[in-house]
Amino acid sequence: MKIGFLSKAAATLVLVGMFGCGPNAEQVKLLNEIKTATLKVDSVSAPVAEALGKLKADHEKFAAIYDTLKTAGKSTPAADSIMAAHHQIITQCEADLAKFAEAAKENKGIEEKFVKQIGKGDEMKSALEKITAQTEEIQKAGEKLTADAQKMTEGHKMLEEIKAAAAAPAVPEKGAKKGKK
Image (cartoon, rainbow, N blue to C red; front, side, top):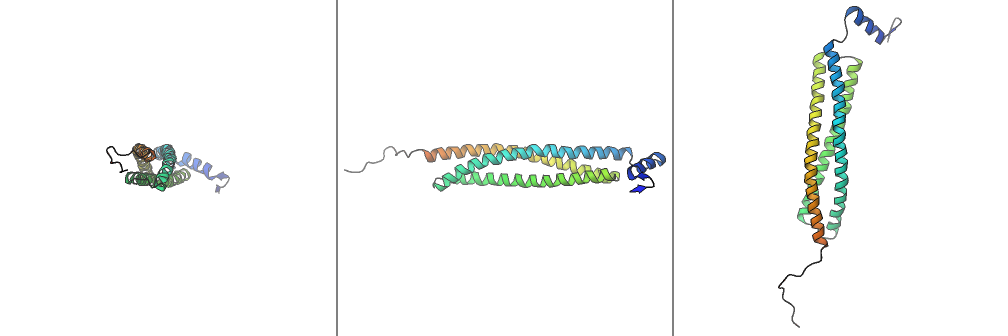
């Protein structure tokens, strides 16, 4: 939009300079905090996504072992429960990351909205609180993923033991009676 020969941005600067209207120091500070918080959401969620990727790759390797055991009829209830639990962990993490990605998009929209037209202080504070809460939620999800990854590692060790036991030749029981000749 042009006002006479001035662009909208130049007109805003003229109005701010002449009449003291425009964003106040608190609004500018809040806008900068929103920008910082939006970047933090991205930086916090990236390692969580990377950890999930590694966890999924590891899980796929052990899913192949499990499938081999199951096909051979040597799966155990413990192996079944390990794989079901791991699948649930990964599914939940994927759902969380999808939710975080959607929140990050929404946060970018909020940031862009306030960059284009600075909002009221209360509105901006509310947006900042929401973004900060999302960051904390992502950090908690990352901590939970780390704990779940440890559980999955332990489960994978058990699965390796089950695989080794299934591959071992059957040892005849001691003291078993021999057939009559």
